[in-house]
Length: 212
Image (cartoon, rainbow, N blue to C red; front, side, top):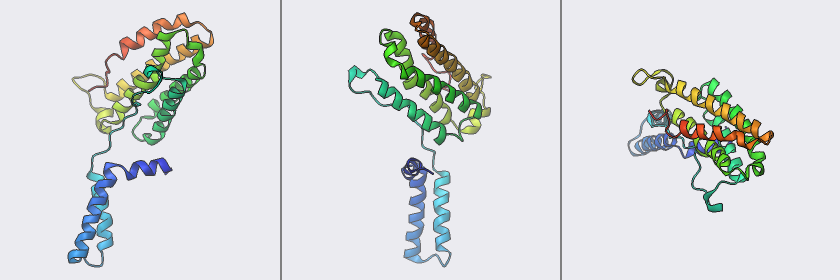
């Protein structure tokens, strides 16, 4: 477990709840004595607290951007892409493999677009679309899925609709297709070809189908 993972666990609700129960058990031992097996009881109560405590909700969207009038810079976007890559590791057990594969390909495409960010300087609308993909569309799709109970996300359907997993894969397919088209158009210096992608993404993600 890396340093960042340890830090997240120490600050998590599950660790705090487990520690509280463990300390309460230790206090009971000091006060009245729990016998020679008290260390086992302390560990057991920590485990119970960690097990029953609610899981912390994941929020992958960045906070307000400062400077440049609130417009994202290439550095801001690069930092957010790094956050999303780390989330693939930290949330790996919550994400289906087919989703992880798609997310990796999307991030690769967006990395290449951001690497040529100055080439979008004269296409403000298209640059905004890429920003939204990195800062909103992709993180929102991921976090809404991982914040659902896993059994519900995979199997449950609401009013006969697709499962949350089905919706996630569909949204990732759209984002992968569009990010690849944007990258291709950018490398071909055909910025006019990006207009349809921008319009399509705004219409598709204006409201999230994962908001169950």
